[in-house]
Length: 155
Image 1 (cartoon, helix red, strand yellow):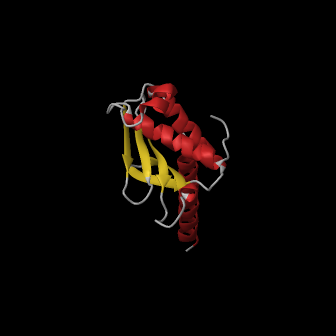
Image 2 (cartoon, one colour; image 1 turned 90 degrees about the vertical axis):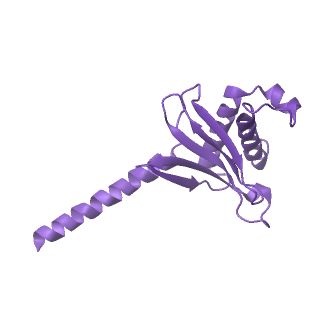
Image 3 (cartoon, helix red, strand yellow; image 1 turned 180 degrees about the vertical axis):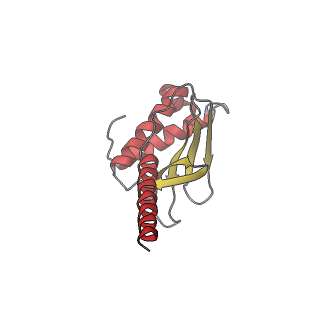
């Protein structure tokens, strides 16, 4: 009986440790190695969700973007998110409005945008971006939306 309780306690402790490590892994924005192997941008017709799916030079996968929470919710209240695979499962974490994690997501989006699209080109291009530039334009949009909600912040 004591041995079964010991094994159960150890199992619970290991599960709690794994859950904690998984949460830390998911909420830490990775440093990406450039050039990116792949960058895809996407948007949903739900009223404002869009994001990026990136694979860096070392094979790390990261998903980041904005998630619309409802058609009647203003754009500045849409939550930023980041996702990474954990044990083969794609998991995401949403950042609180104005949180440190949101700022880190913004910094990563800005870094991605600058890695493949010149800001001057982004400003004057409008809809004339070529297909290779379009995911970087999504990154610029994400960055600009997160900066705007913080009242201008850093560019």
